[in-house]
Image (cartoon, rainbow, N blue to C red; front, side):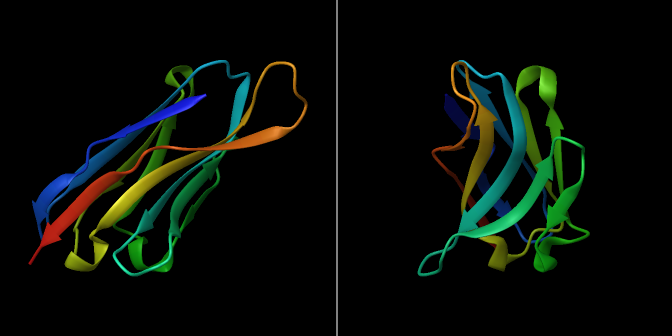
Length: 120
């Protein structure tokens, strides 16, 4: 299973970006999808996640500004980021928990990261 994240870039404060993450490979199902970020000198943190039933989670600082969504047919998860702030600057990573053929257990996979830079 491979994850390809895209959509990062440089944006001014108040602007918007949409991140995408496509999962490819032998996948039976993806039960949970999430976006994490890691700012310089800080630990990686969960920003938003969505589970198979559709329930979502958002880290407090992004509530009301970020929206996580998915396209199950395309094994894709999105992160719409509005009203961006300089403190949102980080490398953003996608992560999925997937069931693969010939294994009953769930595996976790990470994307390569996409840099989001918000200028003031």
